[in-house]
Image 1 (spheres, rainbow, N blue to C red):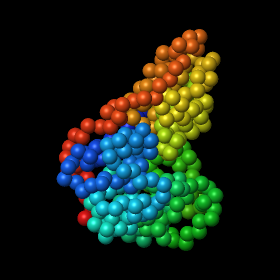
Image 2: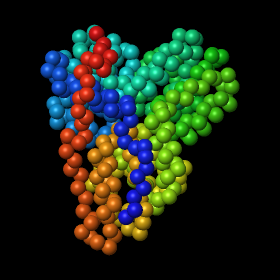
Image 3: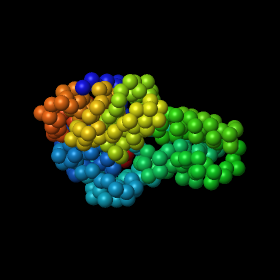
Image 4: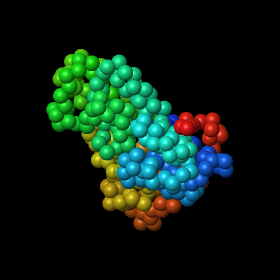
Length: 322
């Protein structure tokens, strides 16, 4: 089977940085134990399981504040998605040792929100409800930052402030975001727009928009909770017009999808380990519809291929909250 390897794909700089912080913490015997991650370090179950095998405890399934309260001493790591200021304060009050793995692109958005709120602005923040990145951004100034996911949310929003700034979650569809921004501008013509979709997200989406259309099927390798992976599926289907499947690894490929197909495009979310994507590509390239011996799929990938080797001392790369 012919495979189109869409690039760029896989880890972005924010994910690499966050994973390196966790791995460095694991290898630093001076850090207080146990080590907790407040939420999934990145939205990929393979990465979370690999760190769990290293003794790291991932707290998941609630707000960052609720998760933080489950940590009983030791070290806590804030994820790439960022956290609200009150979560940082609670960690300090409880005497927890904190490492901050917030993506620099998310930090830039937080700084923008602080700056505009200090200047008297209300913020319309475009983001996905229930996702940890908007949770952290809105938490900077809950009464002044207004989360909008769709046009229906905009219709219920009434702002009388003539100073309005618009920004967004870093991993959204650039096309959906642009359409919603146009509607916001129609309602609030003086609104200042700061598009904060990160470059890694934009480049991956643009590549899929340009190349997925050459394939009979597109496979996006990523976790179902990964917003950027889900947006790649959306771009492939809605912009490139190609039937698309999201799989977490090669074991989730249904061979029925491949029958009658000649060309398959493959890409992966920004938090997907390269080894997982390579196993998908390798499987597809050897797949032969007429040869049942090529149909078998294996999902086993060694943790050593998923986790990064610590490159620098943990204290040299983290923002420690005291």
